[in-house]
Image 1: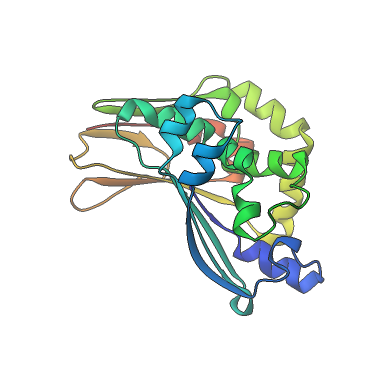
Image 2: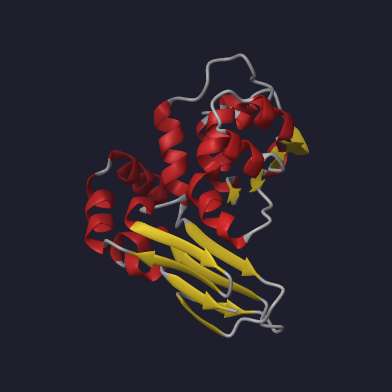
Length: 223
């Protein structure tokens, strides 16, 4: 999962509302491997520790150029493990308070539940109304309750706040990139772009798509 927070960072700086998480940091280009934190965590199950022990977080921060990118990675051995990672990786990151520790805030008051909820909903919009499956030869993301997504984005306070932020920062874009060692045979999905070797595909959507056409977030590939 990759988040580009450059626009948010620039806007906060212009408004004088400097993010406390980066207040003492001017520049950073670091990768933190989470193995020690994962294995020592008492709020993760044995299965979670085994799955996420090789996860990592990379952050690139440059205040002078209003740049802030966060990349969270988790390798896996079996395709059957991918749904668990997609659905719960960000939750595990929050349990570990890994981003706080990355900024050197260990021991300080953790982020509020509201902040964590916004982060999770921004990364996985409408996740409760969708289903992701992965098996040998096929990966699919289905919308199982379009009406449910439409209702929650129009009434949930977190989504309403995200819409207000978009009026200042511009459209929020979601890209799903899938790369395989085998060529893709068939695929469906919004704004699909297939690489020349047919082994990488990118689906692109926007936050507005989720508000007005949530069905566009669905995709399916066979390889």
